Image (tube, rainbow, N blue to C red; front, side, top):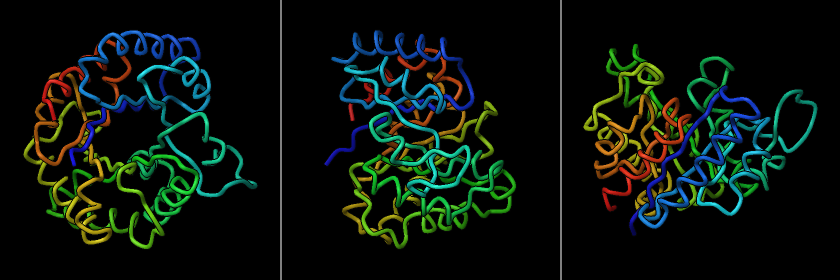
Length: 259
C-alpha cells in the first residue's frame, strides 16, 4: 500500500499571536487552491502551544492539519508549565515527540520519548517521533548505533502503535538549522535502516506502513530530491515552513513526484 507523503512545518519558538494567524490563513488559502493538484499530500503545521487554538481555528475546514511541538506523558498533575495529550485532543491531530532540541536543551531521554509515545497513542494523537545523530556521533561512525538505540528506546514495549498513523522523522542534529542538509542518498540509507529496526520490533508489514520523514535544512530546493528516495515519505521542515509561499512550493514539489 502506498504511503501518503507529509510536509510538516515545525514553527518552533517563532511567530506572534498575529503572525501565527496570518501565516495559518495564508497557508489555508494557498493550499486550498493547490489541493486538487497536491496528490493527497498531508499538510501539517506545528505552532507554539500558546497559538494552537487560534491556528486550529484558522485552519478549520481546510487541508491544513495542526500538530503540537511537544507534550507530557502524564494525563494531569503537578507539572507546572507542561501540557498533556488530553489537553491537546481537539486542538491538534499530530504531536512531535523527542525532537533533538528537546533532547539537547530540556533533558529529553529515550525513556521519556517512550512514555510520551505511549500517552500520545492512547489519546488518539498521531506521533511524529524524532531520531538522529549529532555531528560528533556521525564522525565517529556511530550513526546506526544511535538510531538503533533511539528507535528501540521509543518503540520497544509499546502495547500498540498503529503504523498507519505513526510517523518517524530522521533529523540528523548536525543538519538542523545549519543550512547543510544530508545528501538524499545518506537520508535514504539512514531511513531504510530505521525502517529495518522498526520491522524487527513491529513486523515488516507494519513497518512498511510507517511514514518516515527527513528533517534538517529542508528547503523548496532540496525536498523533492529527498522524497524521490524510496523510503523517504516527506519532510519535517523548520525555518522554511515560516513562509507561506515556501511551504506551498514544497507541497507542490512533493506532489509532483507522484508517489
